[in-house]
Length: 362
Image (tube, rainbow, N blue to C red; front, side):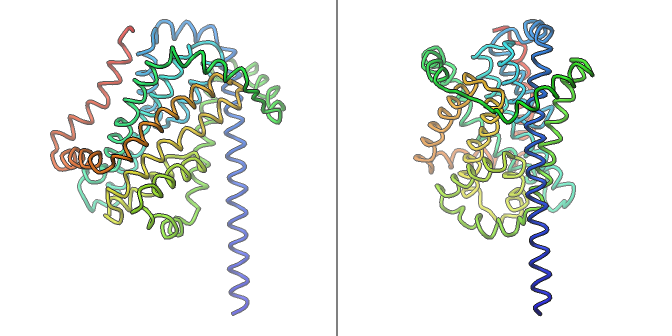
């Protein structure tokens, strides 16, 4: 009996050690990828600036570009990191950075739709509409918050920019420990060239985020569900858990992906899930702030925090008027799940709207 207890304890220690090692490796790889992206972007500043002036000549196209790019990459964090890197290299303006980060939020629910579709093909216990219902719900919630937050923040930006400029001047950002990576990243870009270096940086970021997701998959999800998700009936606790889990893991794919099967199998009610998703949409800004800090860009930090605060303000208003808000979301969600033509029209609009915005010369 004592031997069994000892074996279980040793196995727990071994698994915990592997999780910590995997987490540290993933974080180090992510930071290296950010530094490499910064070096590649700086080296490619001239051609990238010409490219953006030709195809992303304005604020609206910047929003549409990042929105569509998030669909293509199924990763808003990578698009947000790229946006900060482009800003730090002087390729895009402050308003374009604000809108590109917002666009990465508006398209981020694509990964939840993808997870739901995969769950459908693996289980086939329900219709496709039911399988991707959490993804559609996430889109509804994200857009209900960040469409008005983006419009409000953009309209206030001319007034906010002097204030943000003053705040950024007082911010002294320094990641001295990462300076050791600069010679290596510069040497890589010089050795392989600007284009391959840029592509390599994106791949490294993807690899680090994928590694982090793999590490998180080894976390005892059943324990998390027993420990946390029974608390979802309290909206403020659910909202806080959404911020905490997403902020700590820097992974919406994990924080939302792990509840897809529970939601699809009716273990969680929609009313319980909504505050959690709203919290996750706040927590997902933390990795973008980290990128801006790593690239030592106080203005980028201030802009991302400004969008976060406007989004938080709108979210708090929604939570304070939760019952009427939920009734509207529930009615729209029910129609999308039950009626195929509305679902198709909704999904088409999610592609058509950002594509049109991307080509509007504003």
